[in-house]
Amino acid sequence: MKPEDTLAANATIEDLRRQAKELGLKNISRLKKKELAFAITDAQKRYAKLKDRIHDAYELKGTLQVLPEGFGFLKNDKMTSPQEYVYVSASQIQRFKLNTGDILSGKVRPPKEDEKYNAMLFLENVNGIATADILKEEERKMQNHNAKDMQRYEVSHVGILDIMPDGFGFLRKENYLPGEDDIYVSPHQIKRYRLRRGDEITGKIRIPNENERFDALLFVDRVNGKPAAEMQNRPVFERLIPVFPNEKLVLETSKDVLSTRIMDIFCPIGKGQRGMIVAAPKVGKTILLKELANAIEKNYPDIHLIVLLVDERPEEVTDIIHSVKADVVYSTFDQPPANHIKASEMVLERAKRLVEIGRDVVILMDSLTRFARANNLVVPPSGRTLSGGLDPEALYLPKKFFGAARNISGGGSLTILATALVETGSRMDDVIFEEFKGTGNMEIHLERDMAEKRIFPAIDIYRSGTRREELLLSQEEISISYRLRKLLSSTPNQYELTEKIINKIGSIENNQHFIDIITKKDSNL
Image 1 (cartoon, helix red, strand yellow):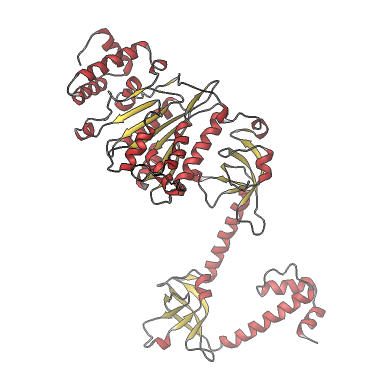
Image 2 (tube, rainbow, N blue to C red):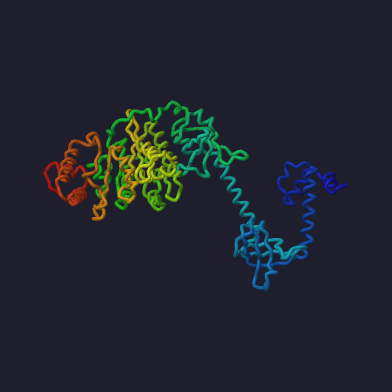
């Protein structure tokens, strides 16, 4: 009779399972009695062989050197030749996450036949810590990790829906772009709840099945903060009726922030404005964007603010994130152009979904020029090329993005303020600006000559302005704006007069006081 048959005949299934656990066998709960007996006897044979080798083993301590092939060697000062080095297997290195320079100690066995080196039989200490303690700590961390994983499936998760061409989708978490924590959404759920790209979905998730990479959405609880059932008959953004901006966004916050105070008087912003910040490099457009974001966040906390940074420097992204309380979506210049397009599209779709439920949204974009550049690299060639190497088809997406800004009749608005780069030395940038000139209904010009003369903010008051500003300004504000613009048009040195106007505004506590002073007496500043 075979050993496994004898063991199976003389022991109960409970005794066999206990022995198997003592031998360190795993996955034994589903084994039948005979299979379990065979596994025990096989393990006992292996341990018997190992026991024979222990008699020849000796203690050794040394420093590890890990080779590119994955295995390593243990050496110390007492060794006089490489033949005395001790072989450390790749499995031991991986099991204990060993690195070159680690101090190891343990039992070493002599080489077997056809082996050149002594080998590490039992690794007992790593950098003075017992390997048993290392394994216990790993097991504790794994248990904590598993507990946290299970908690993930007990709470609701929130993400922005991105729908794929095949009909399924993913809930994006950070930055609206693909990531490891994305949640799969099935085509059935998208059709059932009439979900759209850019929706904010709240719901429970389930553990992924075998061969599934992502967690999956179990059920949809809320869409854009409202019960899912209420969102099935919402309007479509493109069918909403656009009207001129007729509600002014007051940007003035304090006496010292002059840029927003100047804009309130000479180039006001209304809900639904489509504004362009025309700027050369190093004239303060990033500072202006931060001041605009902080003003909107402070004066209108109910407005949903999104800052979109396309092809931007990583340090600028970090600065914006730390300076502004808003959704900051970014794609840095070291990422492929497709990422720039993806981030911009997701921001636009998110804004549309909010406007559809009557929310006011403001997007601050830097920059429209770099968005067009990126699209020029990925768009299929149309066979025509504008000056500077720009394909006309590359302007479609940027114009679609910029043109989405509108004030909606009956409630809701999408305001977009985007920067356009000029004087960069690139003919393509000039062409992009020329193509967008006139598409907005508000422009702010930042002048390089003013910045070089250290006149800040470097806003060219004469060239900056808003269409149909009479819908946003009071009669007194319009009168002051016209009067100062006439002064600027008649003076030979506009920058000097502009500096006087800026200094005068800065010396007065607030804009209303400034208007009262100018209205009561005809001052030449």
